[in-house]
Image (cartoon, rainbow, N blue to C red; front, side, top):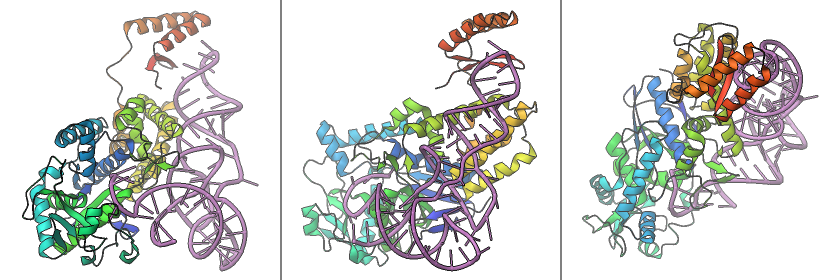
Length: 457
RNA sequence: GGCACCGUGGCGGAGUGGCUACGCAGCGGCCUGCAAAGCCGUGUACACCGGUUCGAUUCCGGUCGGUGCCUCCA
């Protein structure tokens, strides 16, 4: 179990991971609002936190990863109204898409995936506590959080409350009801056209965006849990508000450490639904496959922006091919001891702010040396490489594809080519190789004879 | 305007007060009948200007350029 340090947004510094209970780590990562299909930008935190959990488990921690879905919200109402469907039906449909799309990443599910709509008792109870402590107030069925009740408001995103110039600006009703423009809604009274609402002591309505996460995170992990995460576009206001709510209701910090992922960019601009420059996750999976997508995400540091470009994608695919290649030449079993420096460095890099990019550098060095040795006729065991790749959920690349071995026609052609080569009929041999290539087979001539390998894009 | 961050070789992308990141692509070579795969070799990269220092891509200041957030956002 290595010492693990993670960049904490609140302090701006690397913080050592110090679990409340030694060996147990709770992570809450904000998931998407389900009003349409998710895009690759939404997928980055899903992948990063899934891989980070794998690393923590590798290090011997018991990890509880919680990733919520926001299934009641203005955008869902608006989209459902446009499509003429019930908002609950839309949220259920898109929630199912979200699960199916992320399942295709083959990273498992988070341990808990709470929904706002099924967490109402906890949400309402938390709001009641805030009202009782005068950190929130009711106004015509709405409930607002009193931002200035939290003396530390702004500490997460390093903003000065007195320099913030407005609140939820363009909502005239909110502006009228708020005692301070900075205040934000914990609860919104039900409005005409909204088809879901819950009863509370202050009236019928539905939760604001931020309160659900404070309530669900606490319900799942308690307060002061180890890591709260999400995309860095959530730092303000979402996470700032979550932190403020829990501070005021519990006199405790919601999370010990805040871990934020960088944005995916398309031609220098953040990929986002509102800009419209999005690549849906399911299309990306269709085009480049989960292996290349996971490797692409791992090839840059999680806090850096990630460039969604053809060159980057092509490079990830090349990396996948290279890993499949080495899987063909390694043997099951222990790896050479003198290569352990690279695998140790790989895990040390992950322990240092989960630096997957640096870790991959060491992994590739391991691969190059292993190739060098197998080319020299040595037998190299795959244990260590498998262990490294398992943390990145890419160890499957070392296993031969079982479902599509060469068919009889291909094998017959290969035999015919062997005969042609034995007769030094190179023209015929090359003709057959071209025919095999047309069927998607690459011929590999080696010391132990020729073999057929699936040609990969 | 405020806050946060970035500018590294053709491209992607780590990192460091002096010593090879790594990968992709290219070029040369080894291997091969020719290939494929793999291996070897190959690029005086650190936006610009000052400062600190024996020495700065790395620290400090400034300039220029870019990105994110500033109550829809992962």
